[in-house]
Image 1 (tube, rainbow, N blue to C red):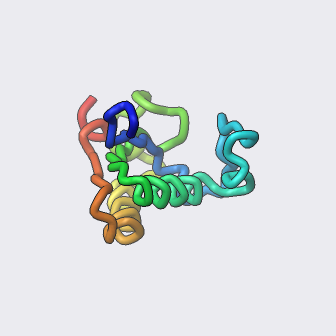
Image 2 (tube, rainbow, N blue to C red; image 1 turned 120 degrees about the horizontal axis):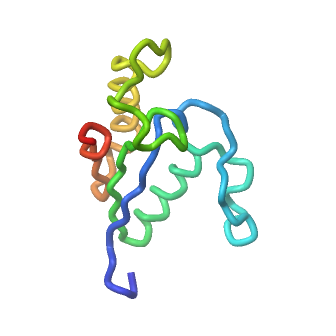
Amino acid sequence: MSLGFNTIRVPFSNQMLYYNASPIAINFGLNSDLQGLTPLQCLDALVSYCGKVGMRIILTRVSCKASNEWNEAFWFIPDDTYYTESQFNADWIMLASRYGGTNYLSFSLLLSMIR
């Protein structure tokens, strides 16, 4: 905020919403409060922190599977039993329900639908 920025874009994958995978690339020496959290719990912590310090968030869905950005032709994976169009919609509904009460968070579908 001291540099004049008040908004961050937070990319996410649908996979991080439901899998209990451990987040990667976090320096736990600097972020010990994130140790042991799921990726969704880390997102909860980020959303909470941003609300406290007056930052805005643009939550952008970039892929179904983690680390698979730009390798998916659609917002779902054809012939996949989990990453369906219906699951895509359910995930957005879950996020809107989870964070919908915040006035500093926006949702973006642009990158997930236009390649």
